Image (spheres, each protein chain N blue to C red):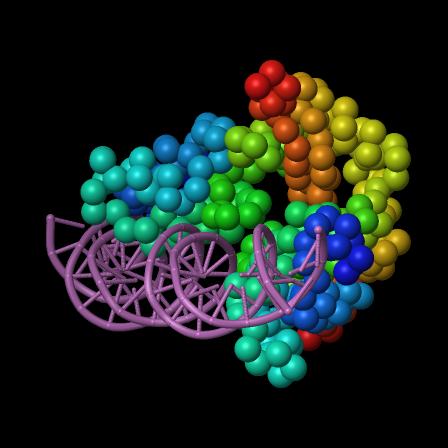
Length: 141
Length: 141
DNA sequence: CTTGTAGTTTAGAAAGATTCTCAGTAAGAC
DNA sequence: GTCTTACTGAGAATCTTTCTAAACTACAAG
């Protein structure tokens, strides 16, 4: 991820290294607030703006993604195409592999039918519902 | 939509009638701000909280939907399952029919594979890219 | 190594979106 | 018509995100 930053002409700073280290491999899709608080102990002088700037730069460079699921934005270090399941109860966000090729083809045909000439850059699927654990607790309790 | 409100035990007020009249059939997916400004001339005393309350009540009753696409929330009077194409350039949001049954089945299998036991309540697809008009202008200009 | 420059960081202000509080008001039931 | 309960209005409060201006520093060039 850091190498990618360099490749796009961005400077490698200590703050960026810390942010990248913090989100790389993090599957919890943290908010800017959460990252800021995690980084504060080792980087007490870091500004909120730096967190946003860095995450914005990473997204713009295609090295991470920004998710808008309601409430605060969430950051996803996985730049490869994939989708998300969001639990209504506990808020957990689970990564999903992309749908099959057939599904993708069907989706693109749907776009072409309703919005002719629309050029798709990114496809984002969100499945909202109840995760297995919350479902079990709701049934039990 | 108003009848639906009644059916869920919510009161029918003049403000709600005005808001429902304003969004029903509106395909532009307005923000709370936009609705508030449209309603102000005929309803100068209406509060912002009332706009949010009403839209929240409509969503909770399943009579409309709230979209989180980045920036302010947008409101969609179409409660039937459908998806959205968002233009990166002009921001226009186009409704899309739901994908085919096969695509839907493939998507659900993908959820079951990666998040076993997750119970899907709502599926939301967002296609980001460039709409036909902006694509044309980018090529020409 | 020294220097120049352009991109970064910081702190705080500012802007924007949404929710909350609470007193006053009105819908709908009886 | 009265009563209860839910709704509305106004503004404050909260939360998220962006902006500003000055100080700083990574990196390339000399």
